[in-house]
Image (tube, rainbow, N blue to C red; front, side, top):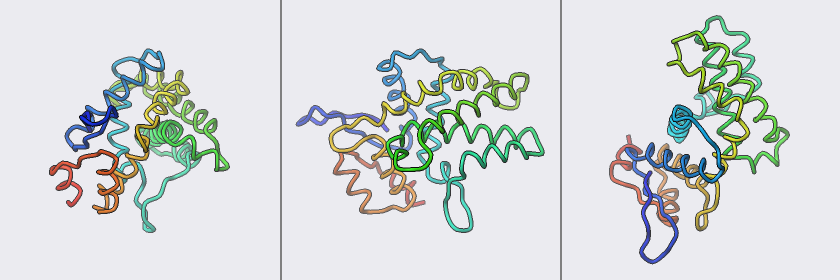
Length: 215
């Protein structure tokens, strides 16, 4: 994604192109950190950007099952970590628990108010997951020396939730989360209706993105 300015409006419009998604998220995260007056390491910023890029794809955020895409509860991810037979399985489950908790608490906190589990639960579980992951990886080279990043995310989990929450601020008639959900739907299904809504919101779908969505 990249930003462009409409000459007839002061609003910022997003141009979504597959090759520019990372640049868009990086700029958004850096802007949000500045607004929140939060100091973060470059490694943590890269981690957040990579997570957002991954989760912008439905097949990365949800898990594919025989019944279709679903999202495993955080508690079950912790159970997977406890029951894991290998180091890799354990750390993968903990990382998934931390990432999903951060993503949901940051971008979908408002929807949690209507559910039995609120945002505090995700903040607690996510911080715990990253904390355990930091301990697990402190002497390991198997996860690209991310122990310090996991420790940073754990200690400031609530603050990083606010950083992602900043991305939810309204721009014209829709939030970034609304745009992301529409983009996920269009990218996964090629929905013409989703494409029309995206264009109405000022999102221009490049030919490269259209080709990727169809294949």
